[in-house]
Image 1 (spheres, rainbow, N blue to C red):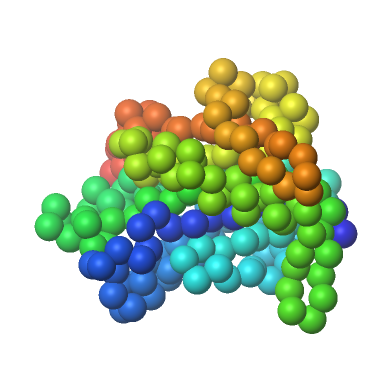
Image 2: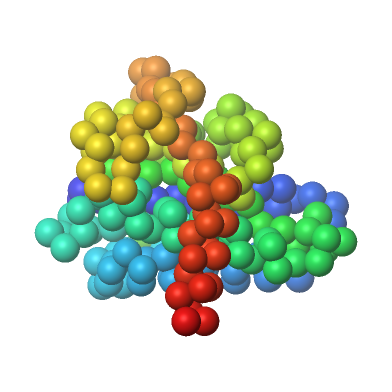
Length: 211
């Protein structure tokens, strides 16, 4: 089955301060924010396979329907997810941020996915997960003030990003990742949303709400 693939992983989920109740709270926040972001992007839940829980993250498989072009994942879903993370973290007391702060890595890919009674599998899923777990992507998030870093596969970059569709800036994606899957070296492109732009967007949204 052809699917668009979205994978999310929480940074530092195994840190000493992250007790099981804290992990439960962070998982709940990720699922809540994902649901809001999907709604913002106009993604109907019927267009998704059941979510695949990853303990400290989630894997989402989206159907190839006309109402769901891949551009929506990059131009609406991911930015909305980032906006929510900024808002959530800003609302935490400073002393609670090491324990309850939420930062995530996100990967978008697409390809052929297989499924059996135990779940989904296949090279496309492997590639998405390799990109997500890339040490360089983890480092990129650690060094970034933004609460989210996004990596897209070379398929997504050349098929979607480079064309500069509305809401997508090709120059903001850098070819910083290299992973090996199926005996081939594969490239990933990294995008770090601007914290300044995210905060400005939140401020504008709040002002509109007050008005």
